[in-house]
Length: 223
Image (cartoon, rainbow, N blue to C red; front, side, top):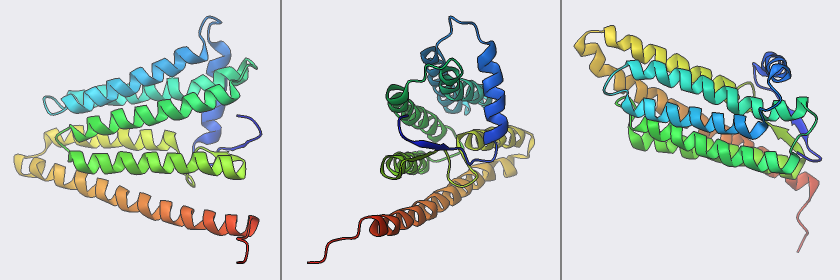
C-alpha cells in the first residue's frame, strides 16, 4: 500500500509476523504471491463445503478446521512473501486482498449457514456485518492514512482460531446424549447472535468516533 501506515494491533500479530517471514524466506523461488492468494481461496472454499457437509458427518468439521488453516497460510503469507522479496504490490495487492477477503468471508459464512448448527439467516447477517467492518477498515485507511487489520486485539487470525475452537466443541457434541445434541443448535445460534450484537456495538462506536474525528479535521462551514 502506498502512503499508508500499517498497524497490526491484533493479539497474535507479532508472533505471526515472525513465523510468516521465516516461512516466506524458505519458500522456493517459483512460488509467487498470487499462488498463495489462490491457495487461500481454495482453503476458504474447502472450509465452506466442509461446513455444508457437516450435517452428514461431524468429521467434516475436522476438515473445515484444516481448510481454515490452509486459508490462513495462503491469505496471510502472500503479502509477507512480496515484502520479503522486496517486490510488494502496493495498489494491486491491496485491491486483490480486499476482493479475496470478501469472497472468502462470504464462502465460509454461507457454508456455516448451510450447516445444521447455525441458521442461514443468522450466518448471512454475520457475513454482512463482517464485510461492513472490513469496508470500514478500508475507508479508515483511505481517509486517515492508517491501515489496520483488526479491531482492538481481534484480527483475522483470532477469528479463524475461534472458528476452529467452535469446530472442536461441535465435534465433541457427537458424544453427548440425544437430548443434549438437540440443544447444540440453540447454543450455537445464541453464540452467533451474541457476535452479531458485539459487531453492531463495535461498528457503531467506531462510526461515531470517525465522524467526530473528521469533524475536527474538516469542520463543516457555517451557513
